[in-house]
Length: 88
Image (cartoon, rainbow, N blue to C red; front, side):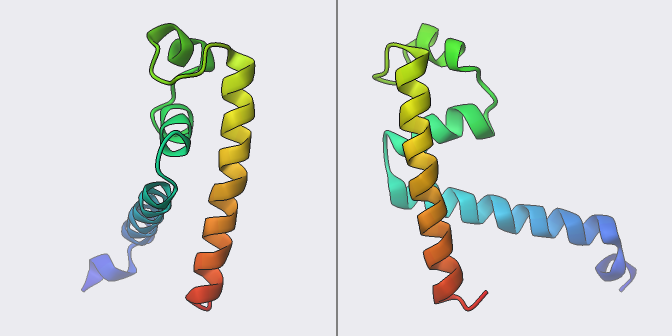
């Protein structure tokens, strides 16, 4: 089938698989990590918007950034563990 060799289709499927994995990893993390990462890196909100809307318990952009940095480190560890478990 021609679509199977289409680079755009392959790229789309790889992107979907990556998105599904990130969602799985975020689900393993739970809140508040899943929320602070999702709001900024997936939904594209600025730290100022997140604080102004009160979408997290953090009241300053600095505290939000520190938490997100800690959470990203945890996300990386989950991803590394997944890679080892799956021999990738």
